[in-house]
Figure 1 (cartoon, rainbow, N blue to C red):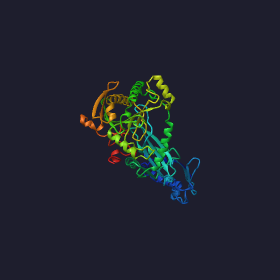
Figure 2: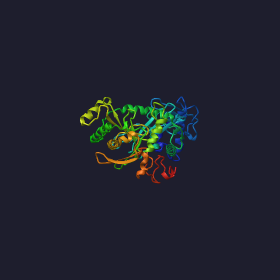
Figure 3: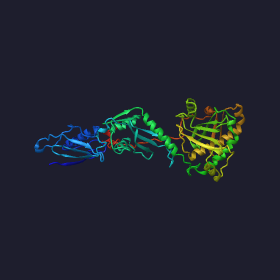
Figure 4: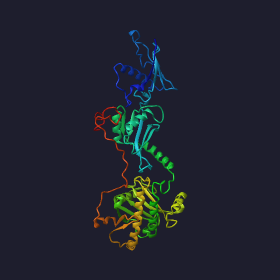
Length: 469
């Protein structure tokens, strides 16, 4: 008497996607069904090769001499199998991506993290991580995930497992090999997928994918929010900026000092110590100043600019920085001009519309904060006072080292020391080098108890899996 066996192979897998612990009675059956799937899926025709698997039935306690026939049903992707002698048979479903799936024997997946080329501005602005998995050699994008500070319990291994079960393109499947560029990522994946070859090597193909992603996001991000960024920054902060910038434009320090003069700035209330200001515009272009976190950052910026190819921007600027420059009103978006008129912010001249910019080390523009605007305003107003008092000395080149404090509109102390290297002469300490105004966003992992399940998703206890790796 023939029978029809309907099988869902995922019932024999654990949460990690590996073969689960089976009873002694179930093991032979699962191995039998697995051999049917393996033989059928490894075949280019989608049919089980003749004689590849013998029938396991024993009618009358004698083993059936039949050799199984099997094929993949194109419409449903089920594997239909039968014995032509005893007519034992059945269907096997959800075999894709299981350890018995023979189609992925040579597939390589490439994965990795990148820092996004954009900011999330809800709450404190941050740059999320972007995770990609692509399949070679077609470079098919299987998964893309954006990871933010709220994803404290995110697991790379868990996400990869989800990708295997539900890829963006094609049926569930598992790769034979994974290639990543990060040692830590490779370590986590090795703990979760010991049966998969994992290689640490350059992922240039992923860099190309990320470059296209960056361009697409840059085009989609061209949305004007105005100076106040939809109310995220107060109009009072920009009113103070326009007043201070107008005064600085009238003093015109760029006409009195060379570009290579570096000024130390300390603003205790703004947590700025030994910052570095470089006045720009001595040639009559790009008037304003650059504010670096430290003189080391300023020097790193200079080295990066010199090393860059002519006409190109260096991939690594060496530091982040704030800047104040002046734009022509005719070059502003009409909505920006309407916002200025609506708030009645003062503008010194048609060529003196202030523009504050905050750049990350890789050149990505960072959304401004209220603190950024107020720092630039304080520096602009106090620089005006410094050059109004010492303009002749600056212009003649006879300036002796000075260190003087000024108060801005909010009575915040702003101390300038000229030149920057004269700080120790006035008892100012030299803090450690600093190359960023912001601490970079790092994805913290929660502390894992020794006896808790391992974060890699293996199903084992942490102490018996990835602890110590």
